[in-house]
Image 1 (spheres, rainbow over the protein chains, first blue to last red):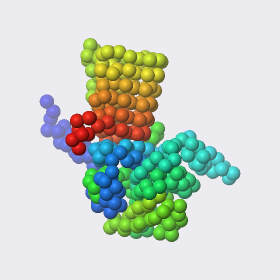
Image 2: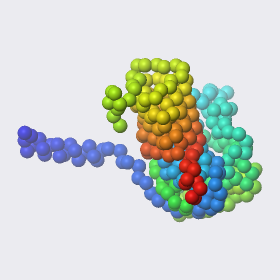
Image 3: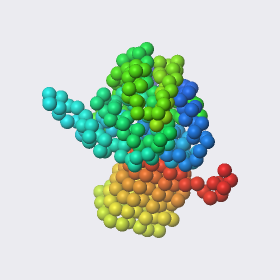
Length: 226
Length: 119
């Protein structure tokens, strides 16, 4: 039988372990005007092809497949951080190989997708991969297809956490902090840059139309029509 | 999820490697490595936590805790447990995915004829 002293020590050890344990990423709900617009299309038609470029989300798969749509899932941020993609440039610095990245990712037939959920990918992806990725998305989308992208505003700050997005309703999203899993330690993606409105317009200049929604949480939602 | 008891499922242990076509009429638990095709049209397949499959899978139901590269077709349901890593297209009437599972590919939910007509 454990003595009172043992129990007291166990109590203190237990509480200190709890204090040092990493916090479980909390989920937070937010309204999304961009998602509301996408949902109008998802509710009005069946068997659309939807590409989700975020981390695997059971909520998103459930939401999309329950409406009779085909869900394609590809975690592009994780793929972009693959060490096997790195090559040395002329200065000897390791940079991602754009050609290899596009040979191995987003390899779909042209004009396949009605909807692409890009989430906050451009903010966290390496600079040299962003434009080629958007160009490839343009190619794999149907004319008239919708693309939803989120950008941080300058107010977010450089340490703004990277979130994954779970669709919980026609205009509701749940956000959860991303912790990427790799072969080694878990990585936490860092905000690479902040796009201003002109940067965003240039990035998507091949798209037919662009619509901005400014949210309260220092996020600009951008809805594009291919 | 624990491994099923011997006798309930045919069992491929973690040191076993199978290359070629694997078919049968009993439920199968794979904790080893299978490359090729798996045909269990009226039975279930469980891929254990150590299981690695590089194959086209046809089964009644599929539960994945390990790694699968290849297309999965299930007439009833597919379950991806939190340790699952799946690269390939999934076609089934139902799918369940635990938080933490990784999936890359297409999910096509087959509508049951009665429900499709009703909706």
